[in-house]
Image 1 (spheres, rainbow, N blue to C red):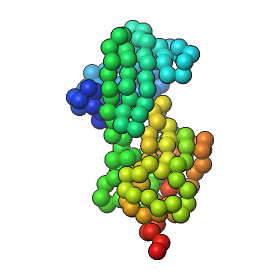
Image 2 (image 1 turned 90 degrees about the vertical axis):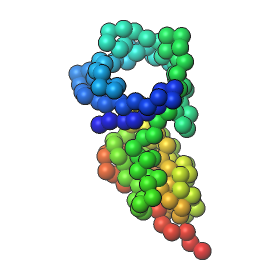
Image 3 (image 1 turned 120 degrees about the horizontal axis):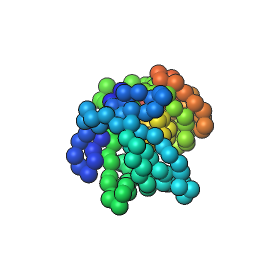
Length: 166
C-alpha cells in the first residue's frame, strides 16, 4: 500500500512494508522502523520512535493536511488520500466504498441532503489518520450505510448517492 503526500511542497511516496511486530514504513524507498512511544497528554502530541530515536511530535490536522512540529522544526504535510481521489474521479458512481478498513468519526450529511461534488459528507479514521469522505458527484445522499463509531472493512459500502429530486 502506497500513499502520495507533499511535505513542504515536495512530493513523496509513503509505503507500508510491515505492520507487525512493528511498523516498517518506507518514504521514497528508504525504510524506517516506527513506534508510538507515548502520549504527551494534551491530545495533539506524542512521542514517536523512528529507528530507535525518540521525537516529540505535535500535530494539528486540517482539511488539506497535517501541521507538524518535530524537533523544533515545523512542517506541513499535504495529503490526497486514495478514497477522496477516487471519489472525485469524473467516473464516480453511486456507491462510495471504503478503500481501507477503519472507523466512522462523524457523519456530516443526512439522507436526502443535496450535495455537490467534493463536499464533505463523512469523516473516517484509518491508520490513525482522519480522512474526509467527499461526495463523488453532484446529487443527493440516498443512503448512509454506517453510523458514528461503526467499524468497516475495505470494500464496504459507506454512502449511496442518487440523482437530485426535483
